[in-house]
Length: 83
Image (cartoon, rainbow, N blue to C red; front, side, top):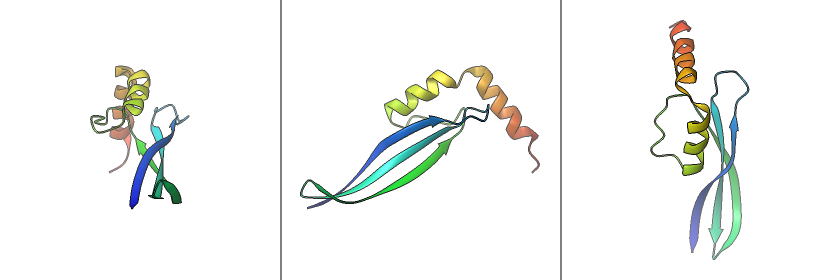
């Protein structure tokens, strides 16, 4: 039986003073419990983004680094960008 498994492989806080979080996922295709193929997928999330659907470990990192001041700084940065 084939099964697709997506796991959090790495969580990084990007060193840009805006505290974006980059998540690396491993996608594994399993056949009868044996990995037959894998690939990597990345996602960047930004301060203040809705975290309800994210894994607990991602929520924990965001909760630790996304203070109200960081979220305010992110919002100011976004507002300063040309449309």
